[in-house]
Image (cartoon, rainbow, N blue to C red):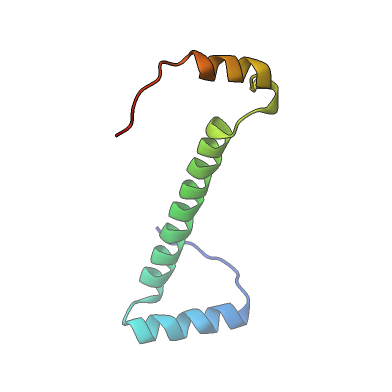
Amino acid sequence: MKTAISIPDPIFEAAEEAAQRLGMSRSELYTTAISRFLDSQNDQAITEMLNRVYTPETDSQLEPDLAALQFHSLPKDDWE
């Protein structure tokens, strides 16, 4: 698909130099850059979701006395 975008001259010039240095066409360079950006955004979204799931909520923590009772109710095992 063809598209037209406006970007600042310094970024365009740097992209042109990078494409030449890497032996890529301008389209290949922009496609690679956009693909990597989208992948990184997806990775960031996944990380944020996992952080929300696994971050402890202060309201759901056990009272210290109850936690101690639960700990002491566990059977004793030798770890040798």
